[in-house]
Length: 237
Image (tube, rainbow, N blue to C red; front, side, top):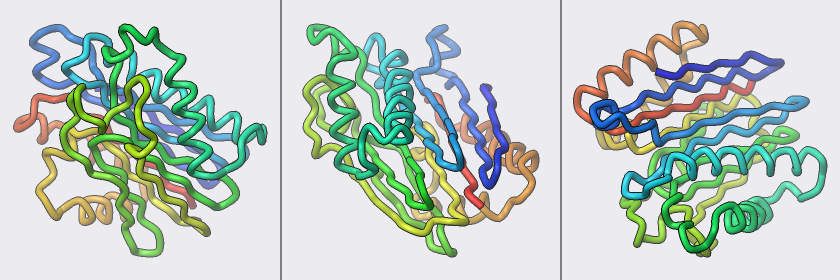
């Protein structure tokens, strides 16, 4: 189990990733990746899941998370404007030069990412998993696509269509609670219980108690699902 948490001014980040039983038995790497960065009250959080059918998908997942951080730095430096379409366009440009075209499909992955700047939030989603944002007792959902095979369009791959991305832009997000996860988690949550899960997690104020709850949940999920499981949370207060 990989654990990371950070505390900053008005920000709390918690990330937990667990290698699935299937990969433990075959001595394969965890194909999920998670990243977080914050600068002057702005932040980015990203979770990516490498496709199991691709030979180097764990590298693709790590690259997807890394590119989100690169774009975040460019946003802070005002090299690109803070708009969903600009973030997606920039991500596509960076992704398409990250791997040789002839083997690019072997790095395919999904992506969930949330960027925040000046009390405004932009979320992008490509592929399966969950991206949920709780603001003022309302839970907003972005993207919960299924599938994820290399021959489908709902994953990051060379020359991908921008339309695979779902985006959202929300203003005045003080007090937001962000929950993102890979499909190893989302496929194990009972249908219709996603919002309740986020509400319960958001209500836990102590970071250590929240960590314990998430860890226990992932351990329980591992009894029924052998996939890698990754959860990222941000409290913006």
